[in-house]
Image (cartoon, rainbow, N blue to C red; front, side, top):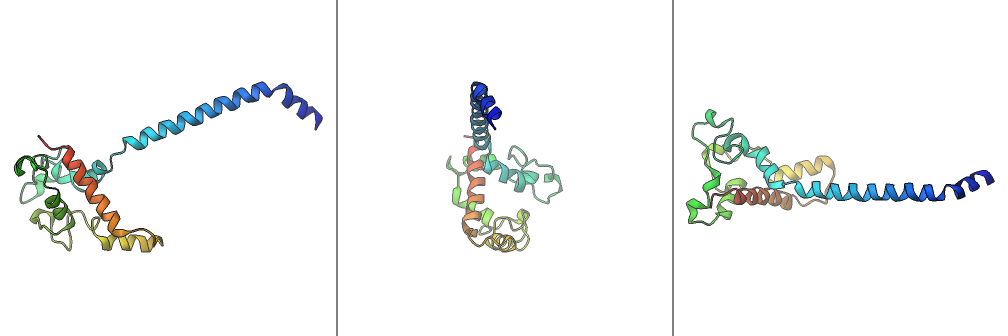
Length: 157
């Protein structure tokens, strides 16, 4: 045991240097991961997964599926312009949650985006995962408000 203690004593400055470098790397890695988390845009992600196929990457209604539809998708970048410069938050919320019917979105029984924005779907997912502590209504609200926030940011002003 004594040789290892002696060895540790002789290499203490080396160990301290290595420990300092590892600490620095860990701090930098944590700072970097924070930047990545800040770069994530939940609204854009929701938009891409639920709206982009029809409304297009830029929201102007020219998505890859737009030509397959009976009626052309709306240009989502001019919602505020068409509403006297005010983004119609409640109207958009009600379109997404199903209170305002849009024929191109399908029936409420089978909307184009499935049940992603319904409380029942969230409750079913949570039951399957055995996670009763999540609030399904809050989850749906967060998803919808994320899309609304993104749509507000892409408005032509």
